[in-house]
Length: 193
Image (tube, rainbow, N blue to C red; front, side, top):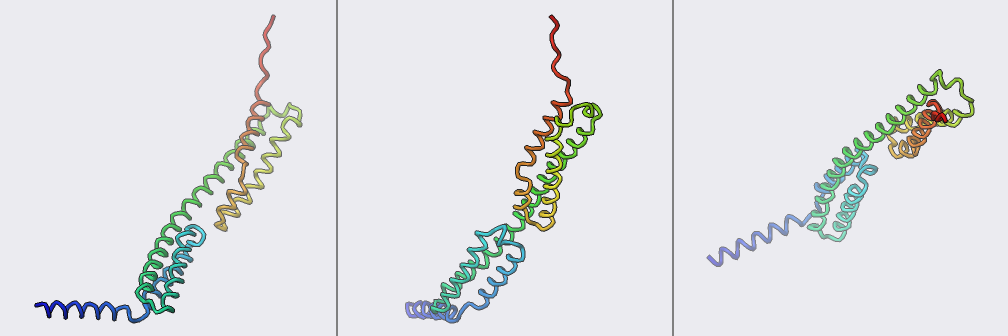
């Protein structure tokens, strides 16, 4: 019985050693394929940390193969594949979130522009000195140009550029609307004495 247990232990040792006697080419190829798929899903932009970790794990796996440490190479290749797959999933989610936020920001700015343009067409404002509404009109014109830039960036899926383009335009439009409202409303009624 003792001899059988010893032979069994020796067989397990030989099998485990032979399973790591060759480079884990299959796993490394799978990791590279997962990295390529993650890159195609824009993980390098939307899940950069996880994508970078996957690439780094595959490089370390290649280094382990060069050092004939196939067990380590196998573990790193598997880690690389899992990280790349995770990065691809994260990228899809982050990309959708970024697009949604960009679309909402454009929609909000466009709504404010339309409100301001409608209020500027109010016939009651035609009697005012044109200088009173010069600033709000300039803000609306500027906002329309900014919206064009933001929409162009959205088409290119450059969501950070959408955010940069819109910048503080929403606050500027709200301030312009306040100026228009103030100009349109009659002055405070004076008390009679």
